[in-house]
Each structure stands twice: as structure tokens, then as C-alpha cells.
Image 1 (cartoon, helix red, strand yellow):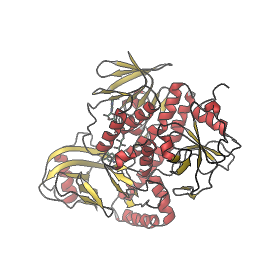
Image 2 (tube, helix red, strand yellow):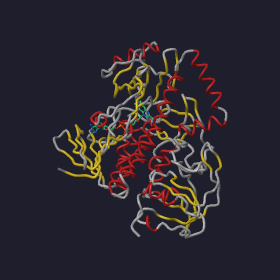
Image 3 (cartoon, rainbow, N blue to C red):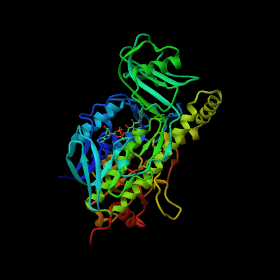
Image 4 (tube, rainbow, N blue to C red):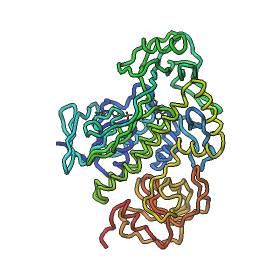
Length: 503
Ligand SMILES: Cc1cc2nc3c(=O)[nH]c(=O)nc-3n(C[C@H](O)[C@H](O)[C@H](O)COP(=O)(O)OP(=O)(O)OC[C@H]3O[C@@H](n4cnc5c(N)ncnc54)[C@H](O)[C@@H]3O)c2cc1C
């Protein structure tokens, strides 16, 4: 039986990102993917939020995405736009880029790393024991892994076979989405009427003065609210025609559909992200309505949270209990996304009272403080992992994303994110050079002396006191803030990067 340290079921955005993270850490990882190629039928995510661009920047690959997409102010709440151009980040914007391109670029990066692919095959089941997991594939082959991660989407077989509950809320709205030819030309853009929200657009567009300008030619991408919820059959051109007539009074002469699919506001989250040697990430762990464009983004960020932890456990540098911090940190993040999407779905209703509520919300979000808070939430920049027990005076950086700083180090200047390209932890000493001794973690943690005289500012929080030193995790979150007394440093190093090497 072929063995791998980690097998990932599903090579969508989450599985690809996780494989990249594990491969960077030198772990033998394989992806089993149902699709024979990365080609994606249909349109799903429309782009990336600021924090996701930052995590890609931490790996040195953000430019690959930025060069193909359209930079724009994409953050919003219930379709109320939220501008983040004044946020203290190098990426104070979002990126318009369809999911098929995001996956292609991610797969290109993963292809440069040591990742094994089993394409055109499905995981059909697994059995775990104390030492590993036997993973059954649809071609009759089996793989043996130390850990299995289900990145296999909302209908996750891994989640179901592990018996992990998926509690939440049944759908209240249903949408059809399709790419079709039309005899008549509808007014492109997003429309609201008493029947709900619908939209027409084209795959290719440009952002001009902050506005989406669609190409004049090509098939039309249509999204329409269905009259009834709960139809689980494959949607047809006839279903789309009927839905359009019900909402718009005409189907614009639709024909020649390239694809048609359905999505709803079903909102559910896995009760546990881990069952012993089996873990879940991305849509396998959480599903919700796409409003706000967060699903792919939080899936990729799940992967970046899990990757280095799983790598350390596989390599034996950290105990298995480190994996529990994955659920502890990421479950609340998705729970918050579920809550905000449910609130946004309510705001999208088109009755007079909801319209009044949305206008009120819009007024509120035009004020600076609420705008900053909601924009930081929607763009993933406000994530605050619980720093655990502390003396109540924790520095605001603790558990938050490390800001993008331009540092001066021995060989010249360096951006903080560049120090994270190889996905290893860094102790950044901004005080007296050579002031820290972490010899017993030197095999895992890089200690870097640097100078930085600029401001320290966090999105939605504002200026924070300049720290003397910070311990940065491979995912870019701050694990310790302190000074040359090194108080608490050994504990933080042990918690996050394993016990010290023997003296
Ligand atoms: C209409 C729509 C619009 C959206 N817009 C946005 C947006 O703007 N922004 C955003 O962030 N998100 C958006 N999303 C959500 C986003 O598409 C998902 O959150 C994202 O695709 C999740 O990635 P994933 O890798 O976790 O799962 P998936 O993309 O579902 O990938 C799962 C992979 O697993 C494979 N697979 C499944 N079962 C098996 C098996 N048994 N064995 C092997 N392989 C298997 C599948 O082939 C697939 O490749 C949108 C979704 C929809 C439907």
C-alpha cells in the first residue's frame, strides 16, 4: 500500500493551499482529486479579500494573482460597499479574479513543490487506527497516511464518514446561476425587485473608476432567485427560463447554456474540525450563502492555520495536542462568518421594512468607526486568535496578524512578509542586537535582529505601542510580544513550536 504522511481529499482551493503549506514544511503530502484536471465548470468565487492576499504575499506568490485580476474595493456588507483604502496594509483592496483562475494559479504553485496528485479518482471511504488512516480510492487502490484531511467541499464524504455532526440552518432562499446566450440584451448589473435579487453580467470585465464594466460580447452570466426552496434535482434551462419569467417577466430568449447550477443559503458548520487522525478544512467544515465573498477566503486561511501545525506534529516536533488549536482558532472564525452571512441574507430581502433597515445600516456603515470594524471583519483583517491565559495586559498584537513592515536588517532592507516565505517561525528582535537566546529552538525558529522606526498600526484598532520583540508564527499571527527579559518566551516557543532541544 502506498504511504504518505498526509493525504488530502479534494484539490479545490483549500486542499491546494494546504498541500503547498505541508510541502513547504518538507512533509510528504498527496492530494486525491475527483476532477481529472483543475478545470472548474461554472462560476464560484469572484475574488480574494485583503487578508487572503496577505497570506499569499507571506508565501511570495501574491503577485501571481494580482497580475491576473482586477484590484478594487470589493469589501461590503449586505451589498453596502466598504472602502478599505485607508487601512494600514500593503493590500488595502480586494482582487476580482474568478475561482477557476485562482485554482489554476494555486495549482501552478503546488506543481512546483513536492506534492503527489491522484487525479480523476475519489476517496470512497477510510478506516483510522491508532497509528494512521487507510484511505480507499474509487479505483480500488488504498493509501496509508498518518493523517487524512477532508478538503472535499460542502458535501464532504470525509466529514460524513467520520460521523462529524454538521448542525446549522436549512435554506430559506435558492438561486440559479448560469452562463447562457440571450436573444435580448438585459440591463447588466445587480437588480432588486419584490421577488428578490437577480443579476446579469459577463465573465470578462474591467474595473473603471471603481465600477464593473462588462465586455460587450460573449455569453451572459445570470443569477436569479427561485420561487421555491428545496428543489434538489439538477437545474435545467427550463427551470432558469421559468425563474426569469417569474422575476423579470421575460427570459430574454435564453439558450445554449454552458452550465447551470443552484446555490442556497444553507448555513452549517462541522461540530468538530478533528476526529483523531482526520481533520476538516474549507467548505467541508463550513457552508453559507456566498454574500460577502468569504467562503474560499476562509478555506484558504483554514489551510494556512492548519498546515504548519500538522507539519510539526507529523515531524514529531510538537505533540498531537497542537492540532486542537486548529479547531479552537478556526471554528470561531467561520462561526462569525456564518453569522454575518445570515445577517446579510436578511438584509438582502426586498420588502419595504428590510429596505428601510438596509438604508439605516448603510447610514451606520458610512460612519468611520462602524465602517472600519465591518470592513476589517469582511476582509479578514480583524482576526484575533485567543492568546490564552495572560496577565490581562496582553499587547494588542498578540494573536493578531503581523503588520506588513519594511525592516532594516543586516543585509539591507526586508519586508516582514518576505521573512515568512519558507513558512517557518521567526523571532523578530527590534531591540539590542543579539539580545535573545533561543539556541534550544534554533533548529525550528529563526531569530532575526532588525530595526524599524515607523508606526505600528492595526486595521480598525489604530496605533499600538511599538514592541521590542515579536514571535511570528508561520501563518503570520503573533505568538508572543515582549522584551529582552524574555518573560514568557520559552513558554510561547514550547506551546507553538514544541519543547526545547536537549541542552
Ligand atoms: C455562486 C457562488 C459564489 C461564490 N462566491 C464566492 C466569493 O466571491 N468569494 C469566496 O471566497 N467564496 C465564494 N464562494 C464559495 C467558494 O466557491 C467555496 O467556499 C470554495 O470553493 C471552497 O473551497 P474548498 O476547496 O474548501 O471546496 P471545493 O471548492 O468544493 O473543492 C472541493 C474539491 O474536492 C473534490 N472532491 C469532492 N469529493 C471528493 C472525493 N470524495 N474524493 C476526491 N475529491 C473530492 C472536488 O472535486 C473539489 O475539487 C462562492 C460559491 C458559490 C456557489
